Each structure stands twice: as C-alpha cells, then as structure tokens.
Image (tube, rainbow, N blue to C red; front, side, top):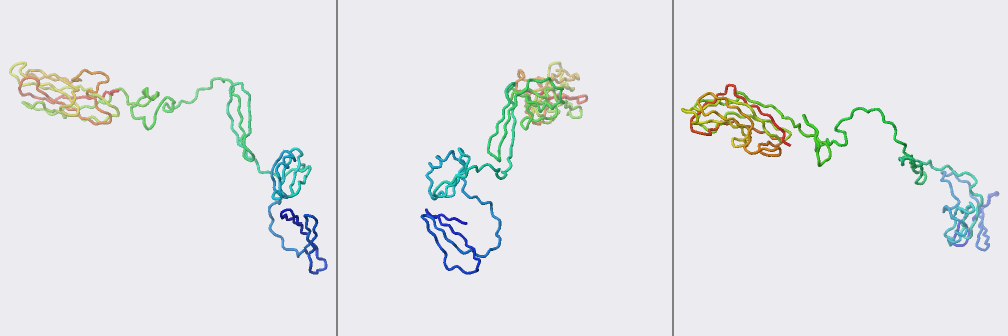
Length: 346
C-alpha cells in the first residue's frame, strides 16, 4: 500500500485482486473527512526489479529531548515522515503530517553493524609521580586515543655506547659552509658557539729550490737582480712565508767596505713585501750569505704584512741588491738553497 500526501488530504490507493478476469469499468472512491480511499484493479505481476537500498519508513532527524521539544518545532504537512528518537522515553516519534505517532520500545533489538572504528593512538611522558591519563577524541569511525604515562625515576647508568663520529656532536658544525678538508682541525667559533673545521695551525711545507734553480754569474753590475723564484701552491688558509737558506755572493772591491751586496726574498713581485733577508760581506772574499725571515715593519699576530690570501697561488722572488758602493759582484750557485714554510695566520 502506497500513501501519497497532498497538502492536508491523505489519499490511499488499494489494489483489488481480479479473480474473474473481468475488466474494471469503475474505480470506486470513498471520501471520509480528509482521507480518500481508491480501489484500483491489480495488474499482472511484472518481472523482479533490481534490489534497491534498504528502505527507511521515515526521514531520520536524530535525538530530541522529549515530546514537548517536538511540539515546539511547529511541524506542518511539509514535515511529514520525519522521525526523532525521544531521549526521555527511548522511543521513536513519527510525524504523519497531521499527528505524532510514538513507537515505544523501539530500541530493544540490536541494530545493523556499523562501520569499523579506525582508532589511532599516541603516548606522551608526564611528570614523575603523576597519574596516567587517557582520552579519546573525534567521532567514529575516526577516533584518536591519547595516553599520558607518568615518567619513571632516574635509572642506573647504562653501559658505554659505541664511539660516535665527532662531526655528529651537537657542538660541532660540519656542513656545506664549514666543510672538512685534509689536515684540518677543530677550532672554537665564538659566533657559532660551536667547534668548526679550520686549517691546521702547524706550518705547511716545506717547499725548496737548490743550486740548479738559481741563476749565477760573475762580474755582474745589475742591481737589483732576480737570481731565483719559487712558486707556492694555493693553501686553504691565509699564511705568511717563513724562509731560510743561503748562497755565495761577494763584491769586487779594492778595499773592505767599498761595496756590499745583500739578498732579499719578496712576495708576488720584485717590489712585494719583504719576508727574507741576508747581509753580504763588503769584501772580495767568498762569502755565504745566510737567508733568514725578516719583515720591514713591526710584526704582531694580527698584522697583515707579508700575508698570502687563502686559496691563492703566489711566487717568491730572490734578489741580489747593492746597498753600498758601485762595484760589480759575483753569485755562485753551488750549494745555494731556499726553503719555504707556510705559517697559518688566524
């Protein structure tokens, strides 16, 4: 039986079996106040249709406190077939469009199985001595269980672990901006408040040249004269040359003191910073001039004089220079030598 609601008139259509096989010529209609009953001949049975979704006899509206709360809604015929669970009576109330129909004890049988609940969880540590707590949040089928566990007391010291990498320590900065390299050491960086890799403070080298790399000669008059060069490869830090060595230089003089030739070592050019020096003898005797570090200005740890920038290849020049007189001189390259160390500058 199908019921159709139109405004405030309820029409009921009831099928009537045709046992004799005679056609109906009249479809009787009975009217009673606001209800109409129509009898219609039952047709032949048709084929089974596709199975539909489970039918609901009402339009579910959820929970409501009590019947008075439903009355307060001011329902009309447009609300027909709406239904509520009345919490105070644990009953279902259906609105027909004209009146409320209660279905008592409507929740005694188990309902259909709902969707499985997907429960996720998390745990956190609470203060030592506190109570454990648990709370479920969200609505099914997606809920979350959060548990707080009281933190235990300090345990015994465990066995020593395996040795870790220094660069993984929290107070060490090794990254793209502070890479490791050969012969680097860790130094404290006051800006980072961490150790970072820096070139070793020990001297690098040595580099040296010997007799075959010096240019000698006799009865020379040119001053200054370049008699050797040595090229030092780029270093990862800024540095200052420390030089030592020697060679034979003597002046052609008639009397002691007439003329004197000294030896210089300079950075980058013949006029570069002076980093090495050797005093000659103002006499005609063979004299080995010893080369030792020397700087033209007072030196301090932070001085920039004589410093080669990091990652820069540089050349040192060895010169003979006349400092007094005008006599010619001779340079003997046998046993000549120059040794260079790179001293890191912080």
